[in-house]
Image (cartoon, rainbow, N blue to C red; front, side, top):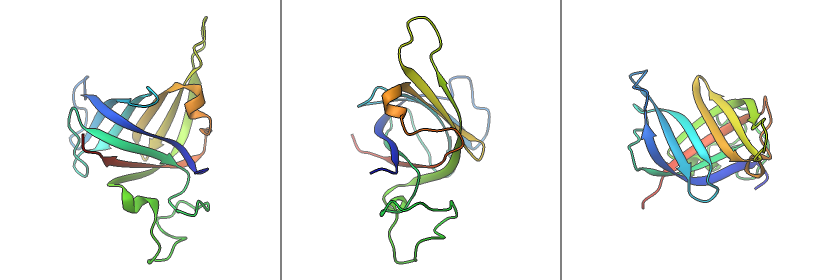
Length: 151
């Protein structure tokens, strides 16, 4: 799908290693299975509890519409009540903006990039091979969709 920027299965490797900063939010440190990407993700654990060792499918996309037509970011504003969206297949959905992209700037550049996204103050950093982040652009609005998977 052209609207899909990234998709993989992640393992939760650590939770709040520097201590819990907020009562209802935890910072997850995760590693992807297929692309060996590193993920740091803030999650509202009151709404979506996560535990050490959990596996989840993560999708970053520019639209929730299954027909991939762009949307305006308003929740279900451009789809009818009868139409299914990508969100229907996931358990936790956030809408945010890519605010920074960084590369390894040093000798022996390894071709790794890090994309930073803010979902209303809940932050995410996705870091790994630059080829896996080719559609990420600063100021692009994106959806994050998460669903736990059985293992």
